[in-house]
Every structure is written in C-alpha cells, then in structure tokens.
Length: 113
Image 1 (cartoon, rainbow, N blue to C red):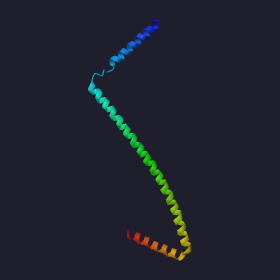
Image 2: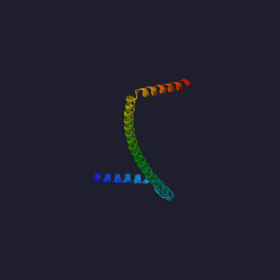
Image 3: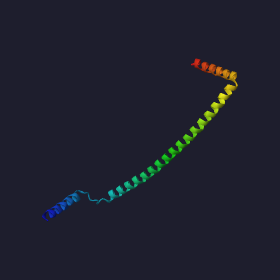
Image 4: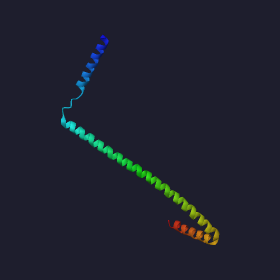
C-alpha cells in the first residue's frame, strides 16, 4: 500500500508541475483574438471545401463533355472518310486533278519561305 500511496503522490506532484507550467488565460484580448482566428480559419475552410467541390464537379463535367465531343468527332471522321473514298473511286480523274492542284499549292507556299 505504501507503493500505491507514493505513486499517487508523485502523480499529483507531476500534475501540479504541469499546471504550474501551463499558461493562465487571464488575457481576454488574447482569447478574443484566438476565437476570431479560429472562426476565420473555419470559414475559410468551408469556402475552400465548397470551391474544391465546384472545381471537381466542373472537371468531371468537362471530362464527360470532352469524351462526348471525341466520340462525335470520330464518328464524323469515319463518315467523311467513307464519303471521300467513295467520291475518289467514282471520279478518279477529278481526284487526281485535286491532288495535283493541292501539291502545287503546297509547293508554292513552301518556296516562298
């Protein structure tokens, strides 16, 4: 029993030392400033969370829109590619003329530099 009493006494002595070292809050201005700072940080945190949610929602929406646009572009490319091949096979002489004219145009533009 002497051991438990001495350990209780040493524990209370340690608590007294901690209490003596802890600052006493006798400064109401400091308490008010601390409270205001906590409120400001909490408000800022709420706004930042709301902004983050908005950005994430916008990014997800943009990704979906981009995916849909890519799908449409692939479909159009396939459609126009098929039409171009059909036109080229139906009119080979016109296709050769267009290719020749395009080659001359590109050559003329490259020579100017």
